[in-house]
Length: 28
Image (cartoon, rainbow, N blue to C red; front, side):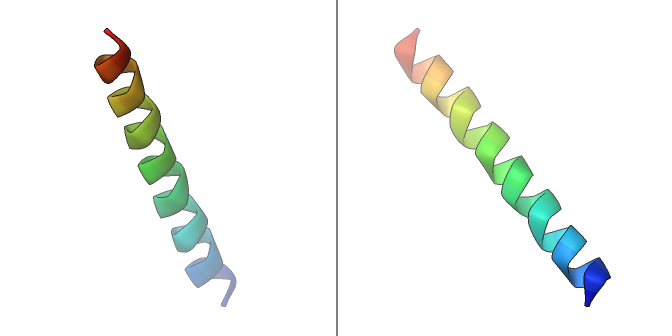
């Protein structure tokens, strides 16, 4: 269970980074 949670949080962080990158690119 803990490993699954870690994997989920990791993926969430990745998507968050991608979203922030897209926002920055759109701003530019």
